[in-house]
Image 1 (cartoon, rainbow, N blue to C red):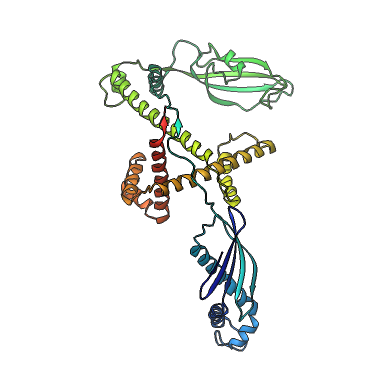
Image 2 (image 1 turned 180 degrees about the vertical axis):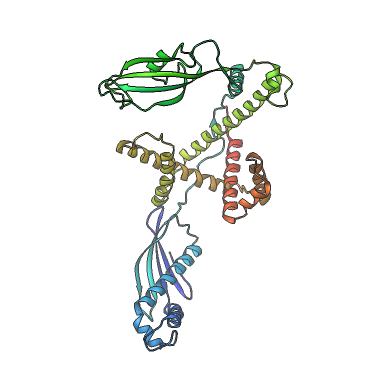
Length: 427
C-alpha cells in the first residue's frame, strides 16, 4: 500500500495481524531545509579557536561537526516523518516503533524502515442476548446477627478483673523470661499482652497462665521438639518465669434498644436491624450485578478471535505481575516455581484485560455509546462524596486533561458493560 505526497513517499506492508513495516522517504529538498536549519543552530552555538562564539565560518562548522549535524537531522526528521505516516494511514501503534535501515547523505533524501506493532482489526462476535445466571443476593437473619455481633465486638469494654485469676478470653499483661537449661543462658525479659487461651499462644503459656492473679508468678519448664517452628526454641528445654501484671476481661454490651441508641440516630434495635439489612442488601445487589456483568463480558471475550500485539501483552503482564507480587504474604519466599506460575498467570490475565478493553471499546463505537462532560462532572462529585473530599479539591484533581480523559474512558467502559447487561438474557 503506497502513498506519495509532494514531499513524502511511504509504503506499508502487513507482516501479520498486529505488525506492519513502514518504508518512508523524504525528498532531498525537505531534508536539506532541515539540514540548513540545524547547521545554522550549530554555527550559532559553537566556539572555535580564533573565532568568537557564533562567528566561525559555516563551512568550517559543517566540516568539523559533519556527523553530529547529520545525526541531528535524522533524530529530528524521523519521528516527524513517522508521525505523519501513522496519522495519514490511521495506524494505531501498540508500542514503540523499531527504526531500521536508515539512509541519509547530506544533499540527498532521507530513507528508513520502521517495524510497528499495531492494535488489531477484528470482527465483533455476537454480543447481544448473552445468557447469564442471576446471582442469589438475599440477606438472611443470620447475616444480620453476624453484623450485630461485629458491632458489639467493636463496642466491647475491657474491665480490670478482681478476685479471680486469669481465664480463657482475658487480656493479660505478663512479664516472661526464659532460661535455656542446657546453656544456662537467660533470654530477654518480655512484657506482652496475652489473650489467655488463644490457639496462637505457646501451649505452655496457656497451660500455666490459667488461674494466676495480678502480682502472682510461676516458674515452669517446657521441652520443645526439634522441628518446632520457632528456631530459637527448637530442641531446647526452657525454664520460664511467668508473672502476671494485670488482667482485663472483655464485656460486650447487651443487645437491646439502649445499645442501639449508642450507634447513632436510632430509637430501637429494630431500626438498627432495618438499616443493616438495607445497606447489606444494596451491597449484595451491586456485587451480584457485577458478577453477572463479568460473566457476560467473559462470554463475549471468549467468542472473539483477537490476535494481540506481543509488546502490549508484555507491558500489561508486567503491570499485572507487579500487582500480584505486592499482594503476596510478606514471609512467602519467591521460589523459581512460584515466579514461573505468577508470570504465566499474569500473562493470561494481561491477554484477558486487553481483549476486554478492545472489545468494549469497539462495541461502544458500534452502538454509539458516548460520555459527555456533564457525566464526567457528576462522577467527580460522586467520588468526592464517597471519599469525603471537598468538591473543589476533587475538581482540581481531575483538572488535568489526561486524568479527566482517563476518567471519561472508565465511564465509557462502564456504560458499555451496562448496555451489554441490559441486552443479556438473565435467568
